[in-house]
Length: 167
Image (tube, rainbow, N blue to C red):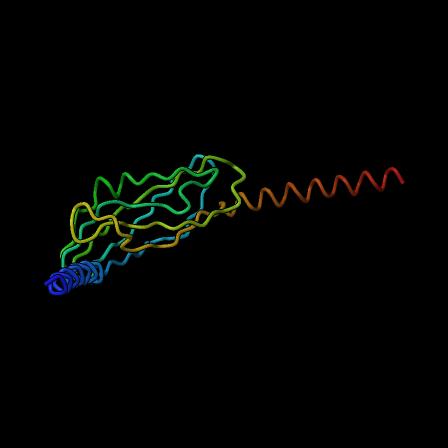
């Protein structure tokens, strides 16, 4: 009798795990950023737009998002565009296109930064599985790089000029 109960309990647990695995496997979400590499100067707010698509056969809830790493010195991430505009769920083969997040550049000597943006959710409104990620970057404005390079060349020329005068 104990053996039958144990077999029945084991079968029930395995069926539950299979159902959870199937639900997670059906959540096939993709994120495509319209312009994943953006440039700017100190004080600029860069807006990242993109498309989130449910390529799976069933609806999926979009319950949150994240950045990895969570913070980068010199940058401020703001996901309020996603939180206020994206739908709470996507039916099979549906998509959302629009603003996902902004990045504010807080320092003038930012060398560039790579990060990952991701969306979480799953088969219900409380699921917190990572559904999809997209890589993005912030790079210095080309004019900023040219200004820094010109400044370094000027300093180098002054140092070389001083050495020649003292010799």
